[in-house]
Image 1 (cartoon, rainbow, N blue to C red):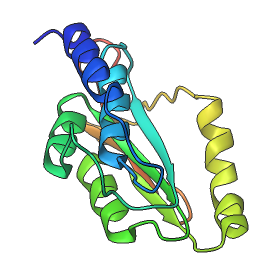
Image 2: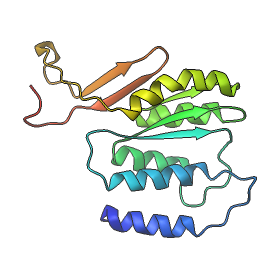
Image 3: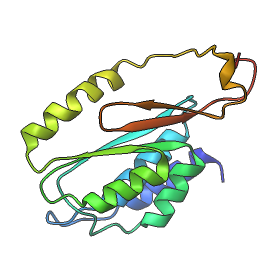
Length: 160
């Protein structure tokens, strides 16, 4: 299926659903973001999910279908959770997509932890690695104090 067609179908189907205020259709929201990103050419795609709740109302995406979609379109999920956010769910989704998660019950403590990452994401940086010891590396990983983010190395003439 052409992603533009898929994007339209997912948006029109999910957007038409009415949700009660006390519900969180977290998988649907993330899935719609992944579908939107799938239409954009980019060497790196990620969705940052900030939540203080738990998935309890999605109708378009399941956890398994969300992971499959994110993997198919090489989209990493980065979670920032607080209060009653489902830590295990965030950890599993982030790990399954090559992303990462941050959790703190205290909103100010969470803000202090994620502000440096948010600032770095706002200003993308291209990195060129020329170390011959890497040979045919297929993935590059960057480690921060308490997180890790990996990206697939694109094949072709840009590799040196």
